[in-house]
Length: 325
Ligand code: UT7
Image (cartoon, rainbow, N blue to C red; front, side, top):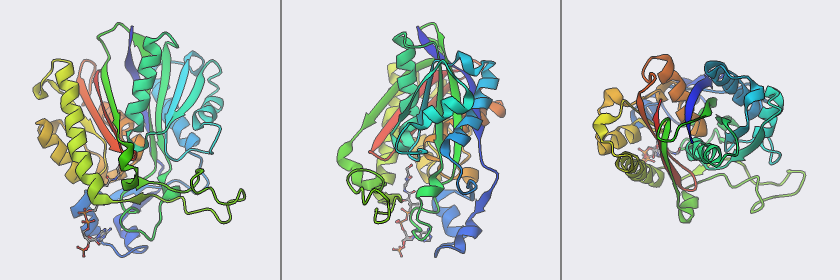
């Protein structure tokens, strides 16, 4: 047995933060952000919104799309680097809010590669007989871990959630392969130092370190292009496909220059590369499922389409998934 994507859904909070809004917070410009990243605006939740709330919204839409009730869900996996709490998992909050009483739930921590990792784990659990139906969610409220005085990072990210329903199917259909990698030697290029045991601070949190994202943009950029290119080509080679067989390539939406360079490396022309970065910025683990849901809505990944997805992120981590929709 294998697994297939039988439903997709997304949720983007309504509040828009434009590049012009950021000009008021840091020394930057709309022109610089558009030129260097391709981002025009991003979404930001109302303060105090938990990640599970937006994850649930995306999940409900994916379940509706699949025509499946929450009772039928066996596995819930949430990929996030902005969980509701240290524990329990955000997936447990999603479970109770959805009333998915028959599921077991857990989070995956692989930063912006989290959705590909979560897809890989859910597929492996279904193949191992540990459930027939999985809800895989990427949900992030990155605005809670951004330093809005650091122009290197605060201009890049946005809040949002995307979800897919995975259901059992014959082997060789649906999700054809997942490839996941990490290199912990490179953790320092992209990390959020606060909130863990390394820099725990006092239990009351008063003297804890800032939870914010810390990043070496240039280093991350180089690795992103190389590794997403490699892992995408690997997905095609392992399955006996070429770049010409791909109907839609969905790379992690981090920077337009990264997306274009990876597209070139893999050899997929721009009209078959999905890009919605200008409207959402980098939503980390949510970026691929949001893109998938929008692509589906736009009729760009119909039933039978071959869709290649690739991501990279803190860890460093990276991965790809090849799917027959
Ligand atoms: O999911 C993974 C998340 N991380 C990423 O995807 C990060 C990947 N990296 C990037 O996207 C890019 O490296 C950035 C967008 C972060 C930076 O773009 P860059 O073209 O690599 O710029 P840079 O860091 O080399 O900086 C060039 C110049 C510098 O000024 P000087 O030293 O040349 O005078 C920066 O201080 O641009 C300046 N700069 C800015 N100026 C206006 C850096 N950030 C900004 C800014 N607004 N927001």
